[in-house]
Length: 245
Image (cartoon, rainbow, N blue to C red; front, top):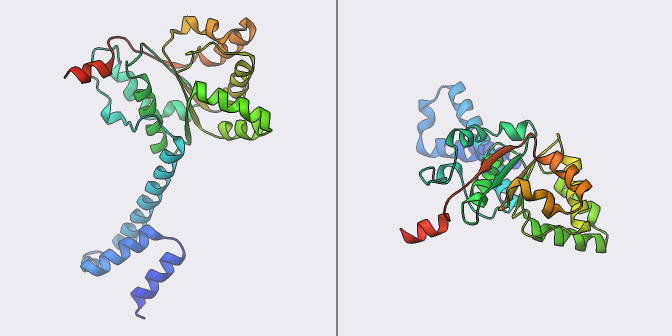
């Protein structure tokens, strides 16, 4: 076995797959002669870094379970729906997630709230944050079942470990007592430590009503609203606009 083969085997055994691929490629194409020793090392390290980043990103995106495969590049700023492009571009650097801040997206059905929320989540994954996407009705129903089978705390811990959670379709139904308490528990643990993104058809003024109990509604809204970045969409359904084109 020649030295190159032995080196390749060692790289793969050490799970340096990106480096191994780049090393094999430089050997096969003969471009290694164009590199100085330090350039070759730099090239191999870059290849390994890219490989690990891409594998991690794939894992984060799969784990997030987004409703849409959406990215910032796909957001249509040309539609008349009250999008502040500068605000969204500022959010795209994910400083809000770094600083454990929240976001609220409101607007009528079909305005593109879930798509933009998915794009925000996708961007957060690109910056290495762990994200989870949850439709509220399904999440609260699932956590109710987990109370019954004794896995509630385990499920809650899973949610708390995420850097960013996206709660979609918040306020479609008035919350019952267990769901109210669950939401308060989730936010209590996250407040100032992690980020949450709320997506709702309801204007923020109506949230007290949909949460129900005034005391708990105060506690929940106090943790969400005051310091959150707000995106308030308006206008016709995006789906209708694209269907008619």
